Each structure stands twice: as structure tokens, then as C-alpha cells.
Image (tube, rainbow, N blue to C red):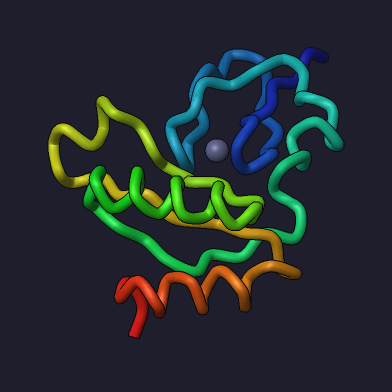
Length: 110
Ligand SMILES: [Zn+2]
């Protein structure tokens, strides 16, 4: 029997289901390879989140200048237009302290 998967919550569904009951994501017949989906997410911690597109651009330029590896999750110019979406700044665990210091100096963090 054919089985479908939710790529988000990894639930299995019988054939005949097309959307995940839990999260509404379209089901796929095969899950993507594990290591591929984990690349870029390993050892990242959230240190800041913002609704401000200008803040994101500024923080990026500062972190770039400092050589810190970071990732803005949820960042999307389309989503930002509505003002309801926000981006979360994720950095590598090893660099989290340094990144927090920088954001403190800039006044983004208390
Ligand atoms: Zn799901």
C-alpha cells in the first residue's frame, strides 16, 4: 500500500490523503533525505527577532563585518509587507555570545 508523508511533522498517511491534518502541508510520497534538511539548522540558536526590515539589513551588515555565521529565519520581503511576520536571527552556538554582545552594543538587546 502506498503511503504519503507530511514533510513538516513527518507523519505517515494512507493513500487518499493529500494534506496533513495537523499542519495543512501538502503531503509528499517521499521524505527528503535527512541530512539535507538538517544542513544549516544544526547548532543554531535564536538570539533576536524583529519585525523591522531595516533592523535586519543593519544587523546583517554588522554581523557580516564581524565574520559571524548567521541565518534569518522567516525573512521574506513579501511577508514583511503585511507587518505581521517577523524574522528570527539564528547564529551558531559557538558564536552566540559574541553575537549577543554585538547586539547589546548596538542597543538591540538589553
Ligand atoms: Zn504536518
